[in-house]
Structure formats: C-alpha cells, structure tokens
Image (cartoon, rainbow, N blue to C red; front, side, top):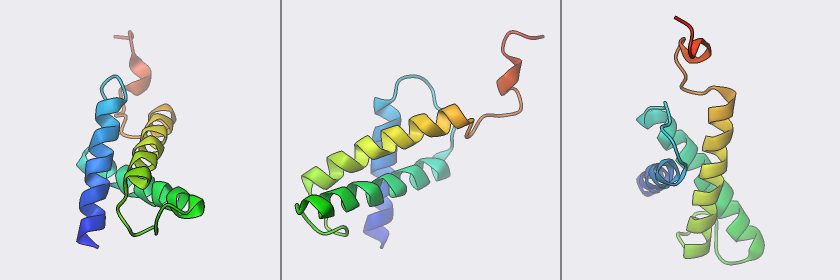
Length: 92
C-alpha cells in the first residue's frame, strides 16, 4: 500500500512536469491525482492483459502518467486549487 502511494506521488509529480504552466495545487492534490491516474492506468493495463492492476509495469506506468495529465488538465479547467482571486484577472 505504501508503494502504491509513493508511485501515485511520482506519477502526479510527472504529470505536473509534463503539463505546461503552473498548477495551483498542493502536494496532497498531486498525490490524489497521481493515485487516481495510477488506478486508471493499471486498469487499462489489466484490460489489455499486460499485467495486474497492482503490478508495476512499463505500460501501466505510461498509461497512469497519461491519465494523470488528463485528470490534472480537467482539474485545472474546473478550478481545482484556484484561490478566491481566480476570476479577478486584470481587475484591480
């Protein structure tokens, strides 16, 4: 279980590095997005037959990073981590 959390954190950090721009989320949200991306990537790898969902393999890891990037992008568009100043761009 600890390995799953560490892998989720690494996947979340990689997703933040891949996605351009500055994301306004903390370490906890990075971890959550990474773990969710890891579950999605592991599920895809399991469906294709390249490994078990709890097994670390290259294809599952790549799919997990892609899923985490997509989740992070969707979270940014939804306003996750945005402070109360998000709608005040350019307004004094």
